[in-house]
Image (cartoon, rainbow, N blue to C red; front, side, top):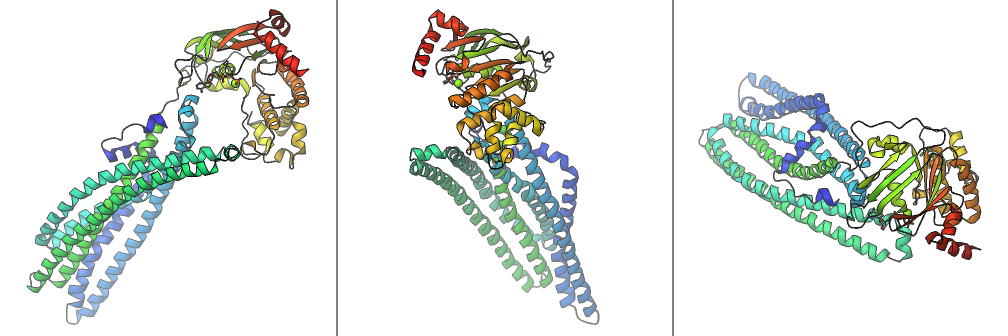
Length: 596
Ligand SMILES: Nc1ncnc2c1ncn2[C@@H]1O[C@H](COP(=O)(O)OP(=O)(O)OP(=O)(O)O)[C@@H](O)[C@H]1O
Ligand SMILES: [Mg+2]
Protein backbone atom coordinates (compact mmCIF):
# COMPACT_ATOMS: atom_id res chain seq x y z
CA UNK A 1 0.00 0.00 0.00
CA UNK A 2 2.42 2.61 -1.13
CA UNK A 3 0.14 5.59 -0.87
CA UNK A 4 -1.56 5.34 2.50
CA UNK A 5 1.16 3.80 4.67
CA UNK A 6 3.87 6.05 3.38
CA UNK A 7 2.36 8.94 5.32
CA UNK A 8 4.15 10.14 8.41
CA UNK A 9 2.62 9.01 11.70
CA UNK A 10 0.53 11.64 13.39
CA UNK A 11 2.03 13.64 16.17
CA UNK A 12 -0.48 12.96 18.86
CA UNK A 13 -0.43 9.21 19.21
CA UNK A 14 -3.66 8.31 20.92
CA UNK A 15 -5.77 10.82 19.00
CA UNK A 16 -5.92 8.27 16.18
CA UNK A 17 -8.21 6.20 18.38
CA UNK A 18 -10.86 8.90 17.97
CA UNK A 19 -11.38 7.46 14.53
CA UNK A 20 -12.95 4.45 16.21
CA UNK A 21 -15.80 6.52 17.65
CA UNK A 22 -18.17 5.98 14.72
CA UNK A 23 -17.78 2.25 15.27
CA UNK A 24 -18.43 2.52 19.00
CA UNK A 25 -21.39 4.86 18.67
CA UNK A 26 -24.07 2.23 17.90
CA UNK A 27 -23.37 0.44 21.17
CA UNK A 28 -23.97 3.24 23.70
CA UNK A 29 -26.26 1.04 25.78
CA UNK A 30 -23.67 -1.72 26.16
CA UNK A 31 -20.99 0.79 27.07
CA UNK A 32 -23.29 2.24 29.72
CA UNK A 33 -23.90 -1.22 31.20
CA UNK A 34 -20.19 -1.97 31.18
CA UNK A 35 -19.57 1.38 32.88
CA UNK A 36 -22.02 0.55 35.64
CA UNK A 37 -20.47 -2.87 36.22
CA UNK A 38 -17.10 -1.20 36.28
CA UNK A 39 -18.16 1.37 38.87
CA UNK A 40 -19.66 -1.28 41.12
CA UNK A 41 -16.55 -3.45 40.86
CA UNK A 42 -14.22 -0.55 41.58
CA UNK A 43 -16.35 0.47 44.55
CA UNK A 44 -16.20 -3.08 45.94
CA UNK A 45 -12.45 -3.24 45.42
CA UNK A 46 -11.99 0.04 47.26
CA UNK A 47 -14.19 -1.13 50.14
CA UNK A 48 -12.09 -4.22 50.78
CA UNK A 49 -9.07 -2.52 52.45
CA UNK A 50 -11.44 -0.53 54.68
CA UNK A 51 -13.26 -3.70 55.69
CA UNK A 52 -9.83 -5.16 56.38
CA UNK A 53 -8.89 -2.36 58.70
CA UNK A 54 -12.17 -2.68 60.60
CA UNK A 55 -11.55 -6.39 60.91
CA UNK A 56 -8.06 -5.92 62.30
CA UNK A 57 -8.67 -2.97 64.63
CA UNK A 58 -12.19 -3.81 65.82
CA UNK A 59 -12.34 -7.54 65.20
CA UNK A 60 -8.93 -8.77 66.29
CA UNK A 61 -7.87 -5.77 68.34
CA UNK A 62 -11.04 -5.27 70.40
CA UNK A 63 -11.59 -7.16 73.60
CA UNK A 64 -14.77 -8.08 75.44
CA UNK A 65 -18.15 -9.63 74.79
CA UNK A 66 -18.83 -7.84 71.51
CA UNK A 67 -15.65 -9.18 69.92
CA UNK A 68 -17.11 -12.44 68.52
CA UNK A 69 -20.11 -10.64 67.07
CA UNK A 70 -17.80 -8.04 65.54
CA UNK A 71 -15.58 -10.63 64.00
CA UNK A 72 -18.58 -12.32 62.42
CA UNK A 73 -20.04 -9.16 60.97
CA UNK A 74 -16.75 -7.85 59.63
CA UNK A 75 -15.90 -11.13 58.00
CA UNK A 76 -19.38 -11.18 56.52
CA UNK A 77 -18.92 -7.64 55.23
CA UNK A 78 -15.60 -8.59 53.70
CA UNK A 79 -17.12 -11.60 51.96
CA UNK A 80 -20.06 -9.45 50.82
CA UNK A 81 -17.69 -6.97 49.21
CA UNK A 82 -15.84 -9.82 47.53
CA UNK A 83 -19.10 -11.29 46.17
CA UNK A 84 -20.18 -7.97 44.70
CA UNK A 85 -16.71 -7.67 43.18
CA UNK A 86 -16.98 -11.13 41.62
CA UNK A 87 -20.39 -10.55 40.06
CA UNK A 88 -19.62 -7.05 38.81
CA UNK A 89 -16.26 -8.08 37.39
CA UNK A 90 -17.59 -11.05 35.47
CA UNK A 91 -20.48 -8.97 34.13
CA UNK A 92 -18.06 -6.30 32.99
CA UNK A 93 -15.82 -8.87 31.35
CA UNK A 94 -18.74 -10.35 29.46
CA UNK A 95 -20.13 -7.06 28.19
CA UNK A 96 -16.80 -5.62 27.29
CA UNK A 97 -15.63 -8.75 25.48
CA UNK A 98 -18.87 -8.73 23.54
CA UNK A 99 -18.21 -5.12 22.58
CA UNK A 100 -14.69 -5.99 21.49
CA UNK A 101 -15.79 -8.87 19.27
CA UNK A 102 -18.76 -6.98 17.86
CA UNK A 103 -16.82 -3.83 17.00
CA UNK A 104 -13.94 -5.76 15.48
CA UNK A 105 -16.39 -7.63 13.29
CA UNK A 106 -18.00 -4.34 12.25
CA UNK A 107 -14.64 -2.81 11.40
CA UNK A 108 -13.57 -5.85 9.40
CA UNK A 109 -16.77 -5.75 7.37
CA UNK A 110 -16.52 -2.02 6.81
CA UNK A 111 -12.92 -2.19 5.64
CA UNK A 112 -13.59 -5.15 3.36
CA UNK A 113 -16.68 -3.52 1.88
CA UNK A 114 -14.64 -0.41 1.27
CA UNK A 115 -11.73 -2.24 -0.30
CA UNK A 116 -13.87 -4.22 -2.74
CA UNK A 117 -15.40 -0.99 -4.01
CA UNK A 118 -12.02 0.42 -5.00
CA UNK A 119 -11.10 1.04 -8.64
CA UNK A 120 -8.56 -1.20 -10.41
CA UNK A 121 -5.98 1.54 -9.98
CA UNK A 122 -6.01 0.90 -6.23
CA UNK A 123 -5.18 -2.77 -6.75
CA UNK A 124 -2.35 -1.90 -9.13
CA UNK A 125 -0.52 -0.22 -6.27
CA UNK A 126 -1.72 -2.28 -3.31
CA UNK A 127 -0.51 -5.69 -2.31
CA UNK A 128 -3.35 -7.96 -1.32
CA UNK A 129 -1.28 -9.24 1.59
CA UNK A 130 -1.22 -5.74 3.02
CA UNK A 131 -4.96 -5.45 2.92
CA UNK A 132 -5.27 -8.88 4.50
CA UNK A 133 -2.99 -7.91 7.32
CA UNK A 134 -5.05 -4.78 7.92
CA UNK A 135 -8.13 -6.96 8.11
CA UNK A 136 -6.63 -9.45 10.52
CA UNK A 137 -3.64 -8.15 12.50
CA UNK A 138 -4.71 -4.54 12.80
CA UNK A 139 -8.29 -5.29 13.69
CA UNK A 140 -7.10 -7.78 16.31
CA UNK A 141 -5.04 -5.04 17.94
CA UNK A 142 -8.09 -2.84 18.03
CA UNK A 143 -10.07 -5.66 19.54
CA UNK A 144 -7.57 -5.83 22.40
CA UNK A 145 -8.09 -2.18 23.06
CA UNK A 146 -11.83 -2.21 22.88
CA UNK A 147 -12.35 -5.40 24.82
CA UNK A 148 -9.59 -5.20 27.39
CA UNK A 149 -7.82 -1.90 27.43
CA UNK A 150 -10.78 0.46 27.67
CA UNK A 151 -12.19 -1.32 30.68
CA UNK A 152 -8.75 -1.84 32.19
CA UNK A 153 -8.04 1.83 31.77
CA UNK A 154 -11.33 2.95 33.27
CA UNK A 155 -11.07 0.47 36.11
CA UNK A 156 -7.56 1.53 36.95
CA UNK A 157 -8.29 5.21 36.67
CA UNK A 158 -11.13 4.68 39.13
CA UNK A 159 -8.92 2.60 41.41
CA UNK A 160 -6.17 5.15 41.14
CA UNK A 161 -8.37 8.10 42.01
CA UNK A 162 -10.35 6.22 44.65
CA UNK A 163 -7.29 4.58 46.15
CA UNK A 164 -5.47 7.87 46.25
CA UNK A 165 -8.31 9.63 48.03
CA UNK A 166 -8.51 6.80 50.54
CA UNK A 167 -4.75 7.04 51.07
CA UNK A 168 -5.19 10.67 52.02
CA UNK A 169 -8.05 9.83 54.31
CA UNK A 170 -5.86 7.22 55.99
CA UNK A 171 -2.72 9.28 56.32
CA UNK A 172 -2.27 12.66 54.68
CA UNK A 173 1.42 12.88 55.56
CA UNK A 174 2.45 9.53 54.12
CA UNK A 175 0.25 10.06 51.08
CA UNK A 176 1.85 13.41 50.23
CA UNK A 177 5.23 11.77 50.24
CA UNK A 178 4.09 8.88 48.11
CA UNK A 179 2.48 11.23 45.59
CA UNK A 180 5.64 13.20 45.11
CA UNK A 181 7.57 10.03 44.53
CA UNK A 182 4.99 8.63 42.09
CA UNK A 183 4.97 11.88 40.12
CA UNK A 184 8.65 11.35 39.47
CA UNK A 185 7.83 8.06 37.70
CA UNK A 186 5.49 9.63 35.16
CA UNK A 187 8.15 11.33 33.11
CA UNK A 188 10.09 8.23 32.06
CA UNK A 189 6.81 6.43 31.33
CA UNK A 190 5.75 9.13 28.89
CA UNK A 191 9.11 9.33 27.14
CA UNK A 192 9.41 5.61 26.73
CA UNK A 193 5.76 5.22 25.79
CA UNK A 194 6.37 7.39 22.71
CA UNK A 195 9.26 5.24 21.62
CA UNK A 196 7.29 2.05 22.11
CA UNK A 197 4.51 3.38 19.93
CA UNK A 198 6.72 4.30 17.02
CA UNK A 199 8.43 0.94 17.13
CA UNK A 200 5.07 -0.80 17.28
CA UNK A 201 3.98 0.72 14.04
CA UNK A 202 7.24 -0.22 12.37
CA UNK A 203 6.93 -3.77 13.58
CA UNK A 204 3.36 -4.09 12.30
CA UNK A 205 4.48 -2.82 8.91
CA UNK A 206 7.28 -5.38 8.76
CA UNK A 207 4.85 -8.20 9.54
CA UNK A 208 2.53 -6.95 6.80
CA UNK A 209 5.43 -6.91 4.34
CA UNK A 210 6.30 -10.49 5.14
CA UNK A 211 2.75 -11.78 4.77
CA UNK A 212 2.21 -9.85 1.55
CA UNK A 213 5.27 -11.50 0.11
CA UNK A 214 4.20 -14.95 1.26
CA UNK A 215 0.72 -14.43 -0.19
CA UNK A 216 2.04 -13.64 -3.62
CA UNK A 217 4.45 -16.57 -3.67
CA UNK A 218 1.93 -19.11 -2.39
CA UNK A 219 -0.35 -18.13 -5.25
CA UNK A 220 2.36 -18.92 -7.76
CA UNK A 221 3.79 -22.16 -6.40
CA UNK A 222 3.94 -24.07 -9.71
CA UNK A 223 6.00 -21.27 -11.28
CA UNK A 224 8.21 -21.02 -8.21
CA UNK A 225 8.93 -24.74 -8.31
CA UNK A 226 9.33 -24.93 -12.08
CA UNK A 227 12.04 -22.29 -11.83
CA UNK A 228 13.41 -24.04 -8.69
CA UNK A 229 13.11 -20.84 -6.70
CA UNK A 230 12.00 -22.53 -3.47
CA UNK A 231 15.31 -21.81 -1.76
CA UNK A 232 15.45 -18.23 -2.95
CA UNK A 233 11.87 -17.57 -1.92
CA UNK A 234 12.43 -19.14 1.48
CA UNK A 235 15.49 -16.95 2.04
CA UNK A 236 13.61 -13.86 0.91
CA UNK A 237 10.90 -14.69 3.39
CA UNK A 238 13.53 -15.38 6.05
CA UNK A 239 15.00 -11.95 5.53
CA UNK A 240 11.60 -10.37 5.74
CA UNK A 241 10.68 -12.29 8.88
CA UNK A 242 14.05 -11.45 10.36
CA UNK A 243 13.35 -7.77 9.73
CA UNK A 244 10.03 -8.13 11.52
CA UNK A 245 11.76 -9.93 14.38
CA UNK A 246 14.34 -7.18 14.77
CA UNK A 247 11.81 -4.37 14.82
CA UNK A 248 9.61 -6.40 17.12
CA UNK A 249 12.50 -6.95 19.48
CA UNK A 250 13.41 -3.29 19.48
CA UNK A 251 9.87 -2.56 20.55
CA UNK A 252 10.01 -5.24 23.21
CA UNK A 253 13.31 -3.96 24.55
CA UNK A 254 11.89 -0.49 24.93
CA UNK A 255 8.85 -1.98 26.55
CA UNK A 256 10.77 -4.10 29.00
CA UNK A 257 12.86 -1.11 30.04
CA UNK A 258 9.61 0.72 30.55
CA UNK A 259 8.27 -2.07 32.73
CA UNK A 260 11.49 -2.24 34.71
CA UNK A 261 11.44 1.46 35.41
CA UNK A 262 7.80 1.52 36.35
CA UNK A 263 7.97 -1.36 38.80
CA UNK A 264 11.25 -0.27 40.35
CA UNK A 265 10.20 3.32 40.80
CA UNK A 266 6.72 2.58 42.03
CA UNK A 267 7.66 -0.12 44.45
CA UNK A 268 10.71 1.79 45.64
CA UNK A 269 8.44 4.66 46.53
CA UNK A 270 5.98 2.41 48.29
CA UNK A 271 8.57 0.54 50.30
CA UNK A 272 10.06 3.82 51.42
CA UNK A 273 6.72 5.12 52.58
CA UNK A 274 5.90 1.89 54.36
CA UNK A 275 9.14 2.20 56.19
CA UNK A 276 8.01 5.62 57.38
CA UNK A 277 4.64 4.12 58.30
CA UNK A 278 6.20 1.37 60.35
CA UNK A 279 7.96 4.02 62.38
CA UNK A 280 4.69 5.91 62.83
CA UNK A 281 3.00 2.78 64.21
CA UNK A 282 5.84 2.16 66.59
CA UNK A 283 5.59 5.72 67.84
CA UNK A 284 1.82 5.27 68.30
CA UNK A 285 0.81 7.85 65.68
CA UNK A 286 -1.06 5.21 63.66
CA UNK A 287 -2.89 1.97 64.47
CA UNK A 288 -1.86 -1.35 62.96
CA UNK A 289 -5.18 -1.51 61.08
CA UNK A 290 -4.58 1.90 59.58
CA UNK A 291 -1.19 0.88 58.33
CA UNK A 292 -2.69 -2.33 56.91
CA UNK A 293 -5.38 -0.30 55.17
CA UNK A 294 -2.75 2.11 53.89
CA UNK A 295 -0.65 -0.74 52.51
CA UNK A 296 -3.60 -2.24 50.66
CA UNK A 297 -4.58 1.13 49.16
CA UNK A 298 -1.00 1.80 48.21
CA UNK A 299 -0.84 -1.57 46.45
CA UNK A 300 -4.08 -0.75 44.63
CA UNK A 301 -2.72 2.59 43.50
CA UNK A 302 0.62 1.18 42.44
CA UNK A 303 -1.11 -1.68 40.64
CA UNK A 304 -3.34 0.83 38.89
CA UNK A 305 -0.34 2.82 37.70
CA UNK A 306 1.37 -0.32 36.47
CA UNK A 307 -1.77 -1.44 34.64
CA UNK A 308 -2.25 2.00 33.14
CA UNK A 309 1.25 1.97 31.69
CA UNK A 310 0.53 -1.45 30.13
CA UNK A 311 -2.75 -0.18 28.77
CA UNK A 312 -1.00 2.84 27.37
CA UNK A 313 1.35 0.56 25.46
CA UNK A 314 -1.55 -1.44 24.03
CA UNK A 315 -3.51 1.69 23.27
CA UNK A 316 -0.56 3.09 21.39
CA UNK A 317 -0.21 -0.03 19.31
CA UNK A 318 -3.91 0.08 18.61
CA UNK A 319 -3.62 3.74 17.70
CA UNK A 320 -1.07 2.77 15.08
CA UNK A 321 -3.41 0.08 13.78
CA UNK A 322 -6.37 2.44 13.75
CA UNK A 323 -4.38 5.00 11.87
CA UNK A 324 -3.63 2.49 9.13
CA UNK A 325 -7.21 1.26 8.94
CA UNK A 326 -8.55 4.77 8.75
CA UNK A 327 -6.11 5.59 5.99
CA UNK A 328 -7.43 2.61 4.12
CA UNK A 329 -11.02 3.67 4.77
CA UNK A 330 -10.23 7.17 3.57
CA UNK A 331 -9.06 6.07 0.12
CA UNK A 332 -11.79 7.01 -2.31
CA UNK A 333 -12.33 4.99 -5.51
CA UNK A 334 -10.93 6.91 -8.46
CA UNK A 335 -13.89 5.88 -10.58
CA UNK A 336 -17.00 7.33 -9.01
CA UNK A 337 -20.58 6.95 -10.23
CA UNK A 338 -22.26 10.28 -10.99
CA UNK A 339 -24.38 11.88 -8.27
CA UNK A 340 -27.43 11.72 -10.53
CA UNK A 341 -26.94 8.76 -12.84
CA UNK A 342 -28.88 8.45 -16.09
CA UNK A 343 -30.69 5.23 -16.91
CA UNK A 344 -29.83 3.10 -19.89
CA UNK A 345 -32.64 3.06 -22.45
CA UNK A 346 -34.70 -0.14 -22.45
CA UNK A 347 -32.82 -2.99 -23.98
CA UNK A 348 -33.41 -3.40 -27.69
CA UNK A 349 -33.89 -6.78 -29.32
CA UNK A 350 -30.49 -6.55 -31.02
CA UNK A 351 -28.33 -5.50 -28.11
CA UNK A 352 -26.49 -2.32 -27.30
CA UNK A 353 -25.10 0.38 -29.56
CA UNK A 354 -21.56 1.32 -28.73
CA UNK A 355 -19.61 4.39 -29.68
CA UNK A 356 -16.08 5.50 -28.99
CA UNK A 357 -15.26 9.08 -29.93
CA UNK A 358 -11.66 10.13 -30.13
CA UNK A 359 -10.68 8.17 -27.07
CA UNK A 360 -7.15 8.76 -25.81
CA UNK A 361 -6.01 6.99 -22.68
CA UNK A 362 -2.86 6.25 -20.75
CA UNK A 363 -2.63 4.13 -17.61
CA UNK A 364 -2.16 6.17 -14.42
CA UNK A 365 1.16 4.46 -13.80
CA UNK A 366 2.43 5.36 -17.28
CA UNK A 367 1.47 8.95 -17.95
CA UNK A 368 3.96 9.25 -20.82
CA UNK A 369 2.82 6.35 -22.98
CA UNK A 370 -0.73 6.39 -24.34
CA UNK A 371 -2.30 2.91 -24.40
CA UNK A 372 -5.03 4.20 -26.72
CA UNK A 373 -4.76 7.13 -29.09
CA UNK A 374 -7.74 8.83 -30.70
CA UNK A 375 -9.70 5.66 -31.04
CA UNK A 376 -13.06 6.18 -32.71
CA UNK A 377 -15.42 3.33 -33.42
CA UNK A 378 -19.13 2.95 -33.80
CA UNK A 379 -20.72 -0.44 -33.33
CA UNK A 380 -24.38 -0.87 -34.13
CA UNK A 381 -26.75 -3.08 -32.13
CA UNK A 382 -26.33 -6.76 -32.90
CA UNK A 383 -23.05 -6.31 -34.71
CA UNK A 384 -20.10 -8.61 -34.10
CA UNK A 385 -16.82 -6.79 -34.28
CA UNK A 386 -13.47 -8.51 -33.99
CA UNK A 387 -10.43 -6.71 -32.64
CA UNK A 388 -7.05 -8.00 -33.72
CA UNK A 389 -3.54 -6.70 -33.53
CA UNK A 390 -0.15 -7.43 -32.09
CA UNK A 391 0.38 -8.02 -28.41
CA UNK A 392 0.34 -4.78 -26.46
CA UNK A 393 -1.71 -2.98 -29.10
CA UNK A 394 -4.31 -1.89 -26.57
CA UNK A 395 -7.07 -4.44 -27.18
CA UNK A 396 -7.63 -5.43 -23.56
CA UNK A 397 -7.30 -1.79 -22.58
CA UNK A 398 -10.26 -1.04 -24.84
CA UNK A 399 -12.39 -3.50 -22.85
CA UNK A 400 -11.22 -2.04 -19.56
CA UNK A 401 -12.51 1.36 -20.65
CA UNK A 402 -15.84 -0.07 -21.79
CA UNK A 403 -16.33 -1.50 -18.30
CA UNK A 404 -15.22 1.85 -16.93
CA UNK A 405 -12.40 0.42 -14.89
CA UNK A 406 -10.59 3.56 -16.02
CA UNK A 407 -11.73 6.83 -17.55
CA UNK A 408 -10.09 8.05 -20.75
CA UNK A 409 -8.20 11.32 -20.54
CA UNK A 410 -9.82 12.49 -23.76
CA UNK A 411 -12.86 11.54 -25.74
CA UNK A 412 -16.00 9.72 -24.70
CA UNK A 413 -17.53 6.27 -24.73
CA UNK A 414 -21.28 5.91 -25.06
CA UNK A 415 -23.49 2.90 -24.58
CA UNK A 416 -26.89 3.22 -26.28
CA UNK A 417 -26.19 6.93 -26.61
CA UNK A 418 -25.43 7.52 -22.93
CA UNK A 419 -21.92 8.48 -21.85
CA UNK A 420 -20.67 5.69 -19.58
CA UNK A 421 -19.61 8.32 -17.05
CA UNK A 422 -23.28 9.32 -16.71
CA UNK A 423 -24.34 5.81 -15.77
CA UNK A 424 -24.41 4.10 -12.46
CA UNK A 425 -21.47 1.71 -12.41
CA UNK A 426 -23.71 -1.19 -11.47
CA UNK A 427 -26.10 -0.50 -14.38
CA UNK A 428 -23.26 -0.18 -16.85
CA UNK A 429 -21.56 -3.37 -15.77
CA UNK A 430 -24.84 -5.26 -15.56
CA UNK A 431 -25.27 -4.64 -19.29
CA UNK A 432 -21.87 -6.09 -20.13
CA UNK A 433 -20.73 -9.71 -20.06
CA UNK A 434 -17.02 -10.33 -20.26
CA UNK A 435 -14.83 -13.35 -20.70
CA UNK A 436 -11.49 -11.97 -19.59
CA UNK A 437 -8.10 -12.87 -20.98
CA UNK A 438 -7.15 -14.48 -17.66
CA UNK A 439 -10.11 -16.56 -16.62
CA UNK A 440 -10.87 -16.60 -12.93
CA UNK A 441 -12.33 -19.64 -11.23
CA UNK A 442 -13.38 -19.39 -7.62
CA UNK A 443 -12.87 -22.18 -5.11
CA UNK A 444 -16.43 -23.46 -5.39
CA UNK A 445 -18.20 -26.08 -7.48
CA UNK A 446 -18.92 -25.80 -11.20
CA UNK A 447 -22.53 -24.78 -10.61
CA UNK A 448 -21.59 -21.89 -8.36
CA UNK A 449 -18.79 -20.80 -10.61
CA UNK A 450 -21.12 -20.40 -13.56
CA UNK A 451 -23.83 -18.90 -11.39
CA UNK A 452 -21.37 -16.11 -10.58
CA UNK A 453 -22.66 -14.57 -13.81
CA UNK A 454 -26.09 -14.05 -12.31
CA UNK A 455 -26.63 -14.86 -8.67
CA UNK A 456 -30.37 -15.56 -9.01
CA UNK A 457 -30.11 -17.97 -11.93
CA UNK A 458 -31.77 -21.37 -11.49
CA UNK A 459 -29.88 -24.64 -11.90
CA UNK A 460 -31.62 -25.18 -15.23
CA UNK A 461 -30.47 -21.78 -16.49
CA UNK A 462 -26.92 -22.53 -15.39
CA UNK A 463 -26.97 -25.83 -17.25
CA UNK A 464 -28.32 -24.30 -20.43
CA UNK A 465 -25.59 -21.63 -20.29
CA UNK A 466 -23.04 -24.42 -19.85
CA UNK A 467 -24.48 -26.19 -22.90
CA UNK A 468 -24.19 -23.02 -24.94
CA UNK A 469 -20.53 -22.70 -23.93
CA UNK A 470 -19.84 -26.36 -24.79
CA UNK A 471 -18.99 -26.93 -21.13
CA UNK A 472 -21.89 -29.20 -20.21
CA UNK A 473 -20.30 -32.36 -21.52
CA UNK A 474 -17.03 -32.11 -19.59
CA UNK A 475 -18.76 -30.91 -16.42
CA UNK A 476 -21.05 -33.96 -16.51
CA UNK A 477 -17.98 -36.15 -16.65
CA UNK A 478 -16.43 -34.58 -13.54
CA UNK A 479 -16.60 -36.84 -10.44
CA UNK A 480 -19.61 -35.07 -8.94
CA UNK A 481 -20.89 -33.35 -12.07
CA UNK A 482 -21.95 -29.77 -11.44
CA UNK A 483 -21.25 -30.21 -7.74
CA UNK A 484 -17.56 -30.92 -8.34
CA UNK A 485 -15.28 -28.60 -6.42
CA UNK A 486 -12.96 -26.98 -8.92
CA UNK A 487 -10.07 -26.25 -6.56
CA UNK A 488 -8.59 -22.96 -5.59
CA UNK A 489 -8.31 -20.79 -8.71
CA UNK A 490 -9.61 -23.71 -10.73
CA UNK A 491 -6.41 -25.75 -10.45
CA UNK A 492 -8.37 -28.93 -11.06
CA UNK A 493 -9.39 -27.87 -14.58
CA UNK A 494 -7.53 -27.58 -17.83
CA UNK A 495 -7.02 -24.15 -19.33
CA UNK A 496 -9.65 -24.76 -22.01
CA UNK A 497 -12.15 -26.03 -19.44
CA UNK A 498 -11.63 -22.93 -17.35
CA UNK A 499 -12.31 -20.81 -20.41
CA UNK A 500 -15.55 -22.62 -21.14
CA UNK A 501 -16.73 -22.10 -17.56
CA UNK A 502 -15.92 -18.41 -17.98
CA UNK A 503 -17.87 -18.27 -21.23
CA UNK A 504 -20.86 -19.98 -19.64
CA UNK A 505 -20.69 -17.48 -16.82
CA UNK A 506 -20.76 -14.53 -19.20
CA UNK A 507 -23.60 -16.03 -21.24
CA UNK A 508 -25.67 -16.71 -18.15
CA UNK A 509 -25.66 -13.00 -17.49
CA UNK A 510 -27.43 -12.52 -20.82
CA UNK A 511 -25.74 -9.16 -21.43
CA UNK A 512 -26.60 -6.76 -24.22
CA UNK A 513 -22.89 -6.25 -24.86
CA UNK A 514 -20.62 -9.30 -24.85
CA UNK A 515 -16.86 -8.87 -24.62
CA UNK A 516 -14.66 -11.85 -25.40
CA UNK A 517 -10.96 -11.37 -24.73
CA UNK A 518 -9.12 -14.34 -26.20
CA UNK A 519 -12.01 -16.41 -24.90
CA UNK A 520 -11.15 -19.43 -26.99
CA UNK A 521 -7.37 -19.13 -27.10
CA UNK A 522 -6.74 -22.14 -24.89
CA UNK A 523 -9.06 -24.46 -26.80
CA UNK A 524 -8.02 -27.07 -29.31
CA UNK A 525 -9.37 -26.70 -32.81
CA UNK A 526 -12.20 -29.13 -32.19
CA UNK A 527 -13.41 -27.54 -28.95
CA UNK A 528 -12.96 -24.11 -30.41
CA UNK A 529 -15.26 -25.03 -33.28
CA UNK A 530 -17.80 -26.27 -30.76
CA UNK A 531 -17.55 -23.15 -28.63
CA UNK A 532 -17.45 -20.99 -31.72
CA UNK A 533 -20.72 -22.27 -33.07
CA UNK A 534 -22.19 -22.01 -29.58
CA UNK A 535 -20.97 -18.45 -29.33
CA UNK A 536 -22.41 -17.63 -32.71
CA UNK A 537 -25.77 -18.70 -31.42
CA UNK A 538 -25.17 -16.69 -28.28
CA UNK A 539 -24.19 -13.62 -30.26
CA UNK A 540 -27.61 -13.22 -31.79
CA UNK A 541 -29.56 -10.57 -29.98
CA UNK A 542 -26.51 -8.87 -28.56
CA UNK A 543 -23.58 -6.77 -29.63
CA UNK A 544 -20.30 -8.64 -29.42
CA UNK A 545 -16.67 -7.59 -29.39
CA UNK A 546 -14.15 -10.38 -29.87
CA UNK A 547 -10.45 -10.07 -29.30
CA UNK A 548 -8.52 -12.90 -30.91
CA UNK A 549 -5.08 -13.66 -32.13
CA UNK A 550 -6.19 -16.61 -34.21
CA UNK A 551 -7.70 -15.07 -37.30
CA UNK A 552 -9.72 -18.22 -37.97
CA UNK A 553 -11.74 -17.17 -34.94
CA UNK A 554 -12.65 -13.79 -36.37
CA UNK A 555 -13.20 -14.39 -40.04
CA UNK A 556 -16.95 -14.48 -39.72
CA UNK A 557 -17.22 -11.23 -37.75
CA UNK A 558 -19.22 -8.46 -39.40
CA UNK A 559 -16.21 -6.19 -39.22
CA UNK A 560 -12.63 -6.56 -38.15
CA UNK A 561 -10.78 -3.75 -36.39
CA UNK A 562 -7.00 -3.90 -36.58
CA UNK A 563 -5.12 -2.14 -33.81
CA UNK A 564 -1.49 -1.25 -33.51
CA UNK A 565 0.27 0.85 -30.88
CA UNK A 566 -3.00 2.02 -29.38
CA UNK A 567 -4.48 3.16 -32.66
CA UNK A 568 -7.06 1.69 -35.01
CA UNK A 569 -5.21 1.23 -38.27
CA UNK A 570 -7.64 -0.76 -40.39
CA UNK A 571 -11.35 -1.56 -40.34
CA UNK A 572 -13.26 -3.85 -42.66
CA UNK A 573 -14.46 -7.37 -43.42
CA UNK A 574 -11.98 -10.22 -43.71
CA UNK A 575 -12.15 -10.14 -47.50
CA UNK A 576 -11.85 -6.36 -47.71
CA UNK A 577 -8.86 -6.29 -45.37
CA UNK A 578 -7.09 -9.09 -47.18
CA UNK A 579 -7.70 -7.15 -50.38
CA UNK A 580 -6.28 -4.03 -48.79
CA UNK A 581 -2.88 -5.66 -48.45
CA UNK A 582 -2.06 -4.00 -45.12
CA UNK A 583 -1.20 -5.38 -41.69
CA UNK A 584 -4.17 -7.70 -41.61
CA UNK A 585 -3.36 -9.13 -44.99
CA UNK A 586 0.16 -9.86 -43.80
CA UNK A 587 -1.09 -11.52 -40.62
CA UNK A 588 -3.59 -13.54 -42.59
CA UNK A 589 -0.97 -14.67 -45.07
CA UNK A 590 1.25 -15.78 -42.22
CA UNK A 591 -1.40 -17.59 -40.21
CA UNK A 592 -3.25 -19.29 -43.00
CA UNK A 593 -0.01 -20.39 -44.57
CA UNK A 594 1.33 -22.03 -41.46
CA UNK A 595 -2.06 -23.34 -40.50
CA UNK A 596 -2.68 -25.12 -43.77
N1 LIG B 1 -2.46 -1.72 -15.63
C1 LIG B 1 -1.59 -1.26 -16.51
N2 LIG B 1 -0.76 -0.25 -16.17
C2 LIG B 1 0.12 0.25 -17.04
N3 LIG B 1 0.23 -0.15 -18.31
C3 LIG B 1 -0.56 -1.15 -18.71
C4 LIG B 1 -1.51 -1.75 -17.84
N4 LIG B 1 -2.18 -2.71 -18.52
C5 LIG B 1 -1.64 -2.71 -19.75
N5 LIG B 1 -0.68 -1.77 -19.89
C6 LIG B 1 0.07 -1.44 -21.10
O1 LIG B 1 -0.83 -0.96 -22.07
C7 LIG B 1 -0.52 -1.45 -23.36
C8 LIG B 1 -1.71 -2.15 -23.96
O2 LIG B 1 -1.99 -3.30 -23.20
P1 LIG B 1 -3.22 -4.26 -23.51
O3 LIG B 1 -3.36 -5.19 -22.37
O4 LIG B 1 -4.38 -3.45 -23.89
O5 LIG B 1 -2.64 -5.06 -24.77
P2 LIG B 1 -3.37 -6.16 -25.65
O6 LIG B 1 -3.59 -5.58 -26.99
O7 LIG B 1 -4.55 -6.69 -24.94
O8 LIG B 1 -2.22 -7.26 -25.73
P3 LIG B 1 -2.34 -8.87 -25.68
O9 LIG B 1 -2.73 -9.29 -27.06
O10 LIG B 1 -0.95 -9.30 -25.36
O11 LIG B 1 -3.32 -9.21 -24.65
C9 LIG B 1 0.67 -2.37 -23.17
O12 LIG B 1 1.83 -1.67 -23.58
C10 LIG B 1 0.72 -2.65 -21.71
O13 LIG B 1 2.04 -2.79 -21.26
MG1 LIG C 1 -4.92 -8.41 -23.98
